[in-house]
Image (tube, rainbow over all chains, first blue to last red; front, side, top):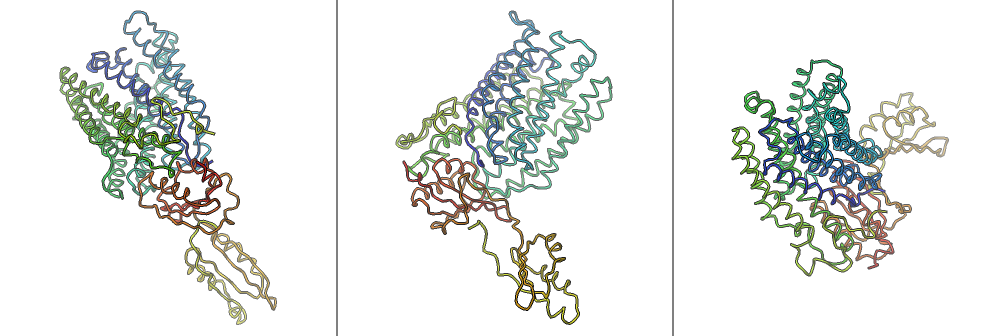
Length: 454
Length: 179
């Protein structure tokens, strides 16, 4: 059947993701996983994975389960795997974090938890990949946005393989030369494949479909968008080739990685040009808060890539590129995630609650579910705090960083409260809130009524 | 009934005089083809069945219907094949070509989503079972389809040639009036 139904478990993925975002930022505020410490420190690794898998990964999977069917206008295949995948990913992440904590010297944890966590994570992400790849495969030839997602899924698989190898070495289960070489030299590649290949490339693809939808801009495939795909794929292929090269003992990865960084910068320029053009060509003159907040995230993407590419800023940032990575993760990926959640959660709630009675009784508009004024203050605080935290990392000022981070955590919690308020329809005037025949949305799950799929 | 704009009347070309005077009509035919408007067909009159031309026109995206007319001459109608996007129909849509003319027309191209969905479902509620609604949208209403199916309505729709407007016919089902 054509058309997209509501994804059953997306709201549960979002709930878990938001919890991990709060936990991750809470860890940083309390000083755990200090970004001023070595990137390879076990506590830092625990923190990074709470954010990368717990927050960004679950958020992305939840969004893709709902929006890949929209990208290819076909229903989701194998949707019953969504819940087992979620449980495996959460259990795997907890084991992984426990394993890192053990390496960091925490009592009661064992490094042997690392490979088990990685195994559960791998199975979980494989289930996700099966659902999404089967949905995509049934809809060939793929439209361009879906081709971004397909590449993102491949990058996800390579990221997991590489990460799984690391856990085997760290736990002492494997001690062969290629695996050790990968652990010693492959961590930045693992991060690049995960943050840029899987999360960023996928987000770009979905944005090509959703932005025209939200702004009423022409939804056509441009040459620049194709150029983003090709340059991005070339950059990722180079990174993947370097992984193989390290495992086979070759040391010549510096040049291909510089080339990959250059290609990624070119892709970002093309993407920025597309974003500017979409904004100019929009027919909706006053854009909603989710679009304004998304463009702040696009600016963070642009700035972080430029800072990474420019020798002056990247050398000021030091070996670990902490400030740039921070801006990339919180300004770009997290900013975009929060901005899109602010649109998706009210929309899905509206469709779930009022879809069955549309046209029969008066229902609120989607925008009646949110209070943009209050949320825009939270977004301003959020981006201001991210900028301040990035500067304090550059300036190597831990105190300023902690203060900025606290503000950032407050803004995040404020935004999550806004999402919960949308979910429980608290902004909707009482007479319209629950019309007869409308299912009541549950906070963390999609209501399991007669509409829950065929 | 199919979701398409009415096509212009076929252009006619009679190559019998050219052939009678010993000329070669191919050039004239190709000029006529090049001068066709979008969606326009070509009606050709020839003293024989122009078999080789069928292949040429096939390559240019035209199907053909040939029939012998009086005096042993032939009339061939070359019709451009549909180049619009494929038509999506609901699973239970039985032969949309036989649906009655729409009683309601909605232009929803300038509305923000999900407002088009609200308008279409509201219009369908007002209509009698079996009546047809026609709507223009700025994009494919993917979240509308499951709701239409759930209410027992049938639909058939596709994008126009420029892919900027989605055209949809909806036939109101019997369950449409059920509360």
